[in-house]
Every structure is written in C-alpha cells, then in structure tokens.
Length: 181
Image 1 (cartoon, rainbow, N blue to C red):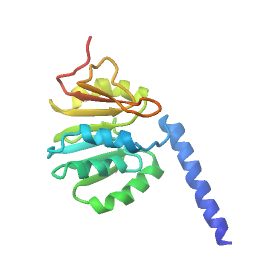
Image 2: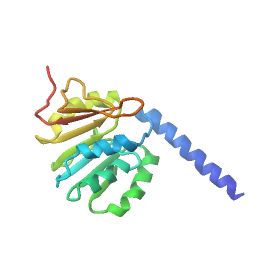
Image 3: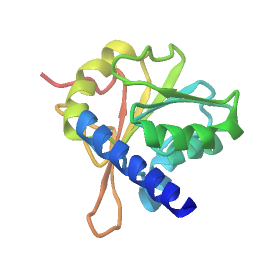
Image 4: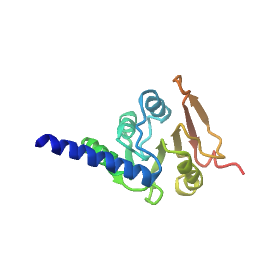
C-alpha cells in the first residue's frame, strides 16, 4: 500500500510541474555545469550588495553566487511551486544571505542594493527585461544571461562555451549598455 503513496506523490509533482510550465511558458531547467561555472566566473567576486536571480529554479546558481561572492547576498525569485520548494529547502543552509521568494520577478520589488542579475529565461522574458532593467536597477548593475540575449542591447562581453550547442552567455552593464534605438 505504501508504494501507491509514492506513485501518487510523484504523479502530483509531475502534474504540478506541467501546469506551472503551461502557466509560465517555460519548464524549470537548471543551469548546468559549464554554463553555471562560466556565469559565476563572469560575476565579480568582490560584490557586497544583492545579486538577484530571476527564475531561480532549483537553486544551484543562487547558491553558487553566494559561494563566488562571500560578501554578497542573493534574492532568488521562482514562481513555479515544485522548483521553488526544492530551492527553498536548499536555501535553509544560507539563511541571512539568501532570500528565496515564490514570486513573479516582473511584479516583485527588486532590492535597491542590487549589483547583479543572473538569468536563464526565454526570449519573451528577455524582451520584457530589456525594457524593465534600466528603469528598475541602479547604474552599473551587472546582468549576466545564459543562452538568451537582451534584444537591442549590446553586451559588454559575449562568451561562447565549448559545448555541443556553442552556448552563449551575455554580460551587460546598466546603464552603460542601454538599448540602442
């Protein structure tokens, strides 16, 4: 009988992930291996303010940012229930330096002390961010994006990973690299 409970729990989790995928327009995808390491290396290690992770998923990149920037804090936004729950559990070890929020980052209030933004999103979200970032973040804020560029923005640096897909990472600064007309 107890085996049925496990099957039921797994079934509910899978259904929940599918519903959130349909609701948010993207499935929860972790930033893996080389891409995560390259994003963290692009992040200045001397940051002592807030690093915001948009679409924090399972928590790997947020925790990596804490390790990379020992004086910094991270605010991680995740709207989907299952990855939020996993990330929240992982975040308990980092209380005081990691604030894990179940929220849509577009409607959330971003911290005034934000010094960097990390994101692995999808093209539609990047279009919205291209407009929101300069209005909502302080001058000089770093923006590091995995795979998807900010439309009409010129990156300060583009990294091409030596993987099968030649994955690109884009590094921007605000407002130095504001959208071009």
